[in-house]
Image 1 (cartoon, rainbow, N blue to C red):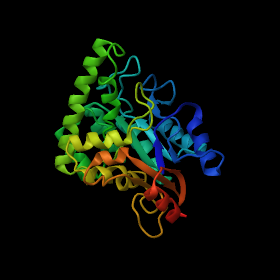
Image 2 (image 1 turned 90 degrees about the horizontal axis):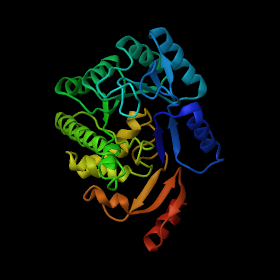
Image 3 (image 1 turned 45 degrees about the horizontal axis):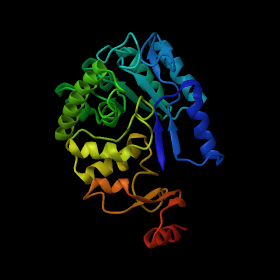
Image 4 (image 1 turned 135 degrees about the horizontal axis):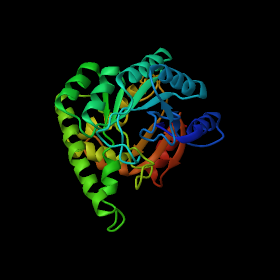
Length: 305
């Protein structure tokens, strides 16, 4: 199993990634971004590297690579969790984004852009980022650009539905109203992107408020609700995720020569996406880490050995 982490303070996730690779900790393979790159005072500046100008953008990117980042995260817009920024506030400027992308791509790394507002989304796509994360106010022009550039959209729908569906009284009324508005826009953007043929990869934005890890199955259900077939949603969570990371040659599909990262579920998720909630077995690199009870699971576990 492989997960991508798009930002953590003080390089902690990079250290965890190394511990997993060394076998000191059992867990999924982690493709870690380290600290996100953001403008001075920009979104997540408290956990990121602040950048002012293209030269600093290059320096910050190289610093993250030197510390072990395997993907680079940039903030192309503000966000709802950082005071003084907003969803339509522009984050890193076009020249800064281009500098990050050129530096990361030269090192063989992908670039993921947190982008909510229209202008920030277009700036990020024009700069050559590999994926747009969230894409709340995706518009027709951005969809056309993403399609032409082959940019992935990672909608992270669950991060908003978790807020909307929180128990009564947990989320203040004004924040709940804002979340509902944001979800309506994000949902519409996903539908537009799917209809146009933009490539979709699944992500959950786990770790944000009320949004714990372990929600990928729910994210795939939401993608089905908003335009993907069940089979396409499975692809978004497997093959497309691997391609978005630049790892399709070793992950993402079941083929001879690729890593044996597999799950066994009770049912056919290409017909009923909810089958992904019924996990019977998890296998990473050919090693069974979790097996359910029953003859099918036991047989699968034995076969995997």
